[in-house]
Image 1: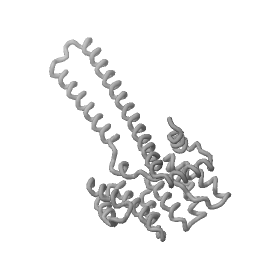
Image 2: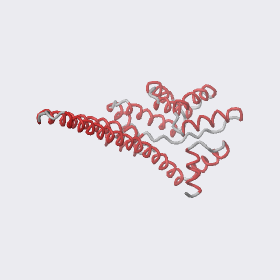
Image 3: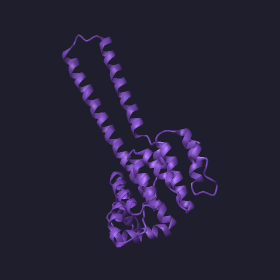
Image 4: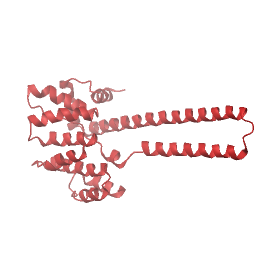
Length: 244
């Protein structure tokens, strides 16, 4: 593991001090390749997490299957008068149960469109004051570690202190969206009226994601088509429209 990779892992694990974090995030903003590598690490962590869950389910299915056939094998030794029709009935039932479990596993672990497109950039707040530094650090750490419930409460406090900060408002909306408070998230995204076009379009893209999360494809398409070719989200929007 090289030094840069080690720093990325330390950053994602929330093990950096406030000063280290600020220096590293400055470097991320100035180095496109580092930003891409950070995103790859985040996606790899999500993939490994889902893979581990899938492997655990497969092991459980194998154990259930082994126990099932073991039990029915013992029963077959003691009940010699079972007819072939009865045996076929249980075989069909076992196959149906296994198929149902596999179908459930497929829908449980397949990657949704929302998961494919909702790769949120790390939260990096501009330092406001020494008294708020700890609160900002905790909010950044919680959000970037995908502890969205914790991040929601911390960002609520920050927005209360800085009600005109649209960037905090957007990230609070993302945290709410991730914990299922989609309508509250939409209200926050819609309220953003920043003079910075990049911030406004960031809010608009997350508004698109909010409808993608709830399966409202019609509204999702409508909003995705509004991005101009000059928008940094135009490419993502076009890709999403092709998959909807």
